[in-house]
Image 1: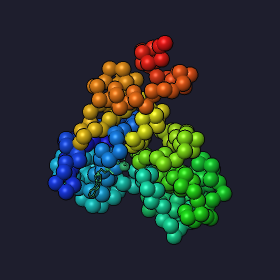
Image 2: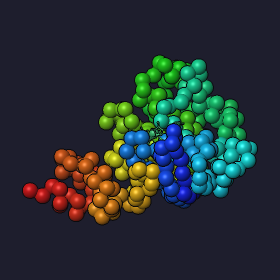
Image 3: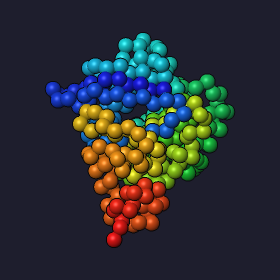
Image 4: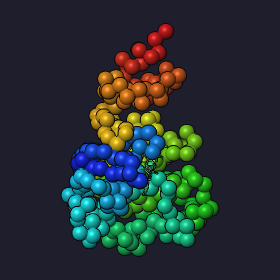
Length: 266
Ligand SMILES: Nc1ncnc2c1ncn2[C@@H]1O[C@H](COP(=O)(O)OP(=O)(O)OP(=O)(O)O)[C@@H](O)[C@H]1O
Ligand SMILES: [Mg+2]
């Protein structure tokens, strides 16, 4: 579904991405995590062909997103549902119009199918009564949920969520994460990627973590293994998040027994 190989990118003479390589296969659910400003959103822009890397190869569902023909790239992007970090709803369109606009451009659905999908998705994100409202009439968390509904309404083969919960309170974050898990990931041939700097959101979304730091992928694997036996920086980055948690919550998150024994023993 996704292949990035040796991708390089710099801004103002400073290296941001230095040799980024990873692959995501069909049927996978993956969290890409890294500290704020480490280049996560930049990776997504390169993946979608919105930004040209200085080096490396980028393939999205078989399409070369660096050298590919514009028409071919556009065709591929129609199969991707992307929820941007900044929401990116059109302010001059109602919630319904935002969703319909996406479906008109990316699917072959007829108007009745689109309206049914609007109702289904808005109900899914618990915003069934907002179809005729404008984005400015909604709270930040509600706008984020509309962004998720818009990303998924086109039944994408690949769904990508950039920081779906950043800046939101823990309760709203949990609601959003559970909605993404409930709404996406029905078909085996599809893939989902969450990008976040929030370790807890990352591990609750997927078993497989790809960890970015200082321009490189520093770990890629099941998070429980990385937490116990990953490289020092990775163990620390993941582990500090859990310091001081209630031990019951540590069990609820299904943290590895070895980690719990080490950090919660008297
Ligand atoms: N088009 C651009 N021009 C110049 N600098 C840019 C551009 N895009 C990103 N940057 C810089 O690259 C760095 C990484 O940005 P990016 O948004 O990829 O990080 P991030 O990991 O997504 O951060 P966050 O966790 O805050 O979302 C930032 O310092 C940003 O200012
Ligand atoms: Mg970002």
